[in-house]
Amino acid sequence: MTAQFGPSYVRAIAPYVAGKPISEVAREFGLDEANIVKLASNENPLGMPESAKRAIAQAASELGRYPDSNAFELKAALAERYDVPAEWITLGNGSNDILEIAAHAFVEKNQAIIYSQYSFAVYALATQGLGARAIIVPAVKYGHDLDAMLVAITPDTRLIFVANPNNPTGTFIDGPSLEAFLDRVPRDIVVVLDEAYTEYLAPEKRYDSIAWVRRYPNLLVSRTFSKAYGLAGLRVGFAIAQPELTDLLNRLRQPFNVNTLAQAAAIAALNDEAFLENSAELNAQGYRLLTDAFDRLGLEYVASDGNFVLVRVGNENDAGNRVNVELLRQGVIVRPVGNYGLPQWLRVTIGLPAENAAFLAALEKSLATASA
Ligand code: PMP
Picture (cartoon, rainbow, N blue to C red):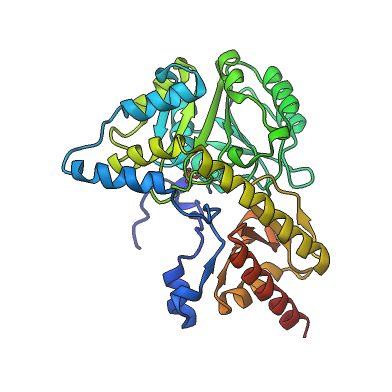
């Protein structure tokens, strides 16, 4: 008999499914990498800001040394931007790292974590990795049902994950609803408010979650430099919370979890307001283009406030995978979401105008192939 390693709750984990890399699709389908369009990982289609590239070039000469473990300058820049003490900030190797650390810091094996159906896959992974119990609350219109999430609270619940906007659905909870929710969550339960896409929100939808952090000692706001700031490959995210929470995060955080180049680039990107504005504007235009086309093609989609759209590409059970393969053949990489329980849907990241056009052309062909 072969040995079985590790706890059963670890063996039960289905690994995270990432967007396919361009090089892999080129190899698999015999395509030229230059002609492949990747709209699969909610990256900023503008790439990294020039300001960040310059900062990286400057910081490169310091790579023989360890990074500043406490990231003094980046924390100072964030503290100033959000008007909070630097002690309220914890940096992560991407905001994924923050989500994982938070689960480990606040929850014990066999205690419960609440999150919504169709919410970001890492909440399930973080929960399972601990051997904690997941309470998955059914979604309403593909988004969070905050009232039901409150009702779902049990005596052993220690953490609630809320994604706003949510990935992969793009659904959004308005500020007043979130605030009313926070008011009703018992103070001994940590709420992790994951705002990975918050920089894409239209001005009239924005709300001040940092003001809530000052009021609610059980609130942790998670943000990232991977999306609108264009630094996904560098891996920088951060949490803002009161010291009672950050103190615990810091005990578990790996000492050098954000590298030297990432720290330098994040400071530059944080101060590059023009880049952020361009990114949001380009995203809004791309969203209109894609959703107009979906309307024209008669495809159902979920209204999104992120930099991606979830679209239903067929009625048969495996429509998402089937259309996905047709798209890959044409060199377009999007994200099938069968692993989220959405096998008829694809999630497409909003790209540059030419990328969106290439995706739509390929999609129309794929749909025609399917119905032929
Ligand atoms: N939260 C949400 C809702 C996301 O969609 C993502 C990226 N897929 C993350 C967190 C993590 O991103 P990162 O680790 O790059 O900050």
